[in-house]
Length: 285
Image (tube, rainbow, N blue to C red):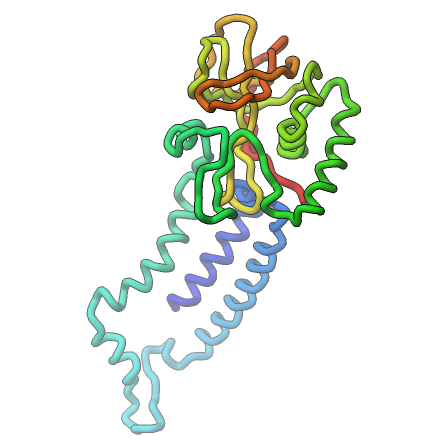
């Protein structure tokens, strides 16, 4: 009976993720077909387990053992003789992800994560090239052969270099940011527009802050925070995690806390906006 309930629970959980739209909080929707396959397989396993449960003689509390002829379920007795913690620990292992996934609220990444992990322009040092956490500047070269990556960046450069005004949407936020960071001098003086959440961080001036988006490459585990330093024409009263739409001119500036020259947006127009239903952006391949 427990196996049947667990399978039903996981089938419902994956189905609920799709119907509620919460799957986007965990993975890049490019891989949503994997969870569809999981729903299909779990549904089949649930049906099989339900059939076995209905047909099983143990359902009535008796099991005849033809080997000993005593009509007693020795396997059931063996399970009952196990210590309490052994019998119920396996239940907790399966129940915890179900209860937490279905009943606990889904927390989205915000500026508190940036503060906790520390904020650096360069990727954090790591012995594993593929486990580097990315900040500000997207870098998809980790996921391509060098020739393929160079070819894609040339195509993206051609796409954006012909625009006097660059408007980054959720669909091309990461690609657009990566192109600008890879060819910073080519976009100076261009107008750019995008939205994200505010993060003051180590901004030197009172009229400066970062406008950021959490981006997902494959799943939430490889997420990074991307965006740009923006500078307003006067002091502003914007708090961390306020969502804002900004428009301005691209320039560059040496940023002492990071010891790096960063692209910076000289804001000409801005307004606060409502947090989007899906606060993340995703990398298309």
